[in-house]
Length: 109
Length: 115
Image (cartoon, each protein chain N blue to C red):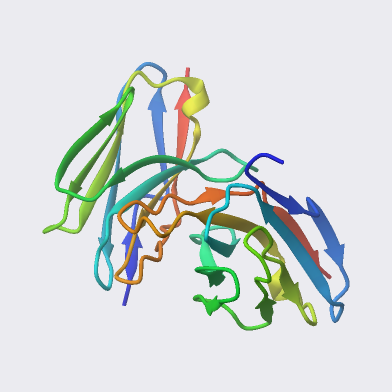
């Protein structure tokens, strides 16, 4: 079957760094997406990885290891507005996104 | 219109009633999707359409139907609503012809309560 595992909730301090891990098992693989979702809002795109390694985009970076079925999202210089849920979503062989339940990130001053 | 719109924003519905959730996009994306999101669960795909005139079943299609008469519109119909269909419904679209990068853009969602 297809399965996504990510922590349910994490807490971090403003200005710090946090890493949100995701492990996945899918039928085939065509890349992995990270989305951000603020409470009561729609998910918005953060990153996409299809090859192994680190993709950096400003304060956010995403890493992928296809052999390990593992990805992480790294958020630096945390700001209060980063309080949100972060959704890991690998794409399977049918190009459908398989969504994790998301990690709720709480930022404290 | 810019992006994807959904209507209504929220709705309270009596069980057994018929309801259509509307979704319209102006990005000329070929693919569209309907998801439901429930607390503690990931987004679950209900139905999708890879191009106008075609539809497919997702992970949780029972009790729902869709149509795709044109590129822009993708309505979701609940023929006879039940309380377990209480959820937040998101419509999304993507330019899936570029299979290597299938970023999905989401509408603002419809919060549906079935009593």
